[in-house]
Length: 242
Image 1 (cartoon, rainbow, N blue to C red):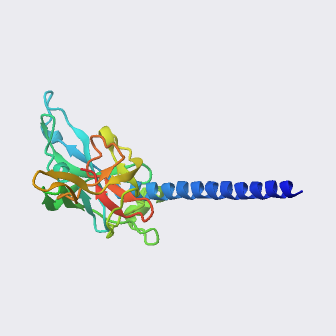
Image 2: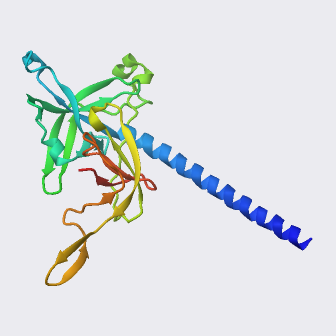
Image 3: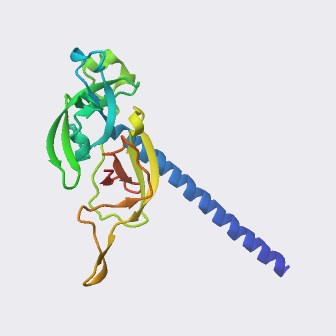
């Protein structure tokens, strides 16, 4: 009888652990869904547009995704990488960088960009999109009503984290890799927040990177540059892919 009681207790404990693990897994999955959707609408593809009026057989009209940015407020301000902000050619074709604003029904328009600040040292840039407006579902304009409810832009933006990133932190990268117009999400962790240096007089020492670089277990592709690195727990941005 005692052995049977012990067996039942062990089974109950095992069942409780399994249930807790399954609940944690579901909670993590729901968190991923939530962060991915928010990042999806806050992240914007940055495109190189050539002057179609000057297109020739040797200089074809060009629209190509060359980087990623993400909105930080409802006034159209966004952040990207400085080297993306400086793009003015695609191959041999001269072009203008524009931000594509997407709609819920997959329609879109290419908006102009005003650069507020470009920090080459940290490879970061702050820009503003124009024209830019947030569609209020409760107060639709004539333009909104003309498009139909499905085309109203589901606005989202991302807040910048005020906390220092920690090693082992789970993060989500949002971007537009390899010229794709569809946003991609990648999951990883912060693998290192500091760099190990060697100075012959004093030996090895550890310090923060002078550019505040993070190492993450995510492989970015061409077009992902400027994409946000989002803390899975808080939903705040802790870094930008450069």
